[in-house]
Amino acid sequence: MALLASPPRTFSPLQERILRLKKEKNAVLLAHNYQVGEIQDVADFVGDSLGLSYKAQETDADWIVFCGVHFMAETAKIVNPSKRVIIPDLDAGCSLADSCPADKLAAYLAANKAADGRELYVVSYINCTAGVKALSDVICTSGNAVNIVNRIPADREILFAPDRNLGEWVHEKTGRPMRYWDGNCYLHVEFTHASLTKIRAAHPDAPIVAHPECTRPVRLLADEVCSTEKMVHYCRDSAAPAFIIATESGMLERLRRELPHKEFIPAPTDLCACADCRFMKQITLEKLAASLETGNPEIVLDPEVARKALPSLERMLEWSR
Image (cartoon, rainbow, N blue to C red; front, side, top):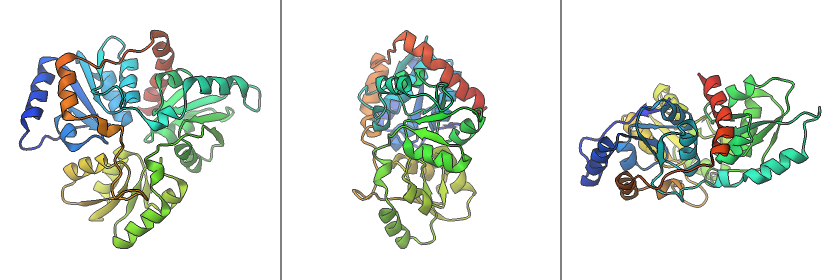
């Protein structure tokens, strides 16, 4: 479940303005774990996709302001069709969602049946567009994917979309055979066995905690593979004083805020010392303030697509309770 953000001792003038606007507009501010610390500080809730999906479904606010990427704001709109859902930058996309266009998925499903002749059972990672959700039987997150797949009848053949790495990890955990859509997160595949081996040599006593969107060689090297939300619990419960974190850099902001007595070391990629998602980092305090002033950019979905997408999300939320 998403956690209530912990405010800093002092706010900048721009942060104070955002807090005032949020109250004036009766807006709830949801921020993903990958957002910068300054945005996490002013959010009502900071968490992973599953926790924020619950908060989006439960809110009585007039406006939902989503500091994350486009598919997350779409998800909030699908479960709140009558509310105004705002994202500070419409161009904050997702390479993983882009890797699975809805028309290509529809064409694949039309051309491919399960071995028994029935339709494939489509499990889609929440990092996908509303159009893909509309073609899916159930949605999952990295935090609940294993449980979701375990709920699917054993006689159904599964297509897991769009993240192949997450799908393979779920197969390893469940033993459930499935087909995979060949998509990935551009950032998480930049972590490599070589880059993690190098940082481990510098910090031999620090456990490596990796997201399941990472490739198998990285997952095999990690001491724990889990969702961002579960990273908080793992690091809190472990006796280790320091951890190497192999996911987007914003997660370290939350970990350092909630566990200030521990050290969190960013895992390097082959390209840089710290992994910043270029899409997540498109959301800034300035854009957030502007969106609260104007109520834009607003998420607008085709009502029929949203209607068809809702059951797969509701099934996920029901199966995850």
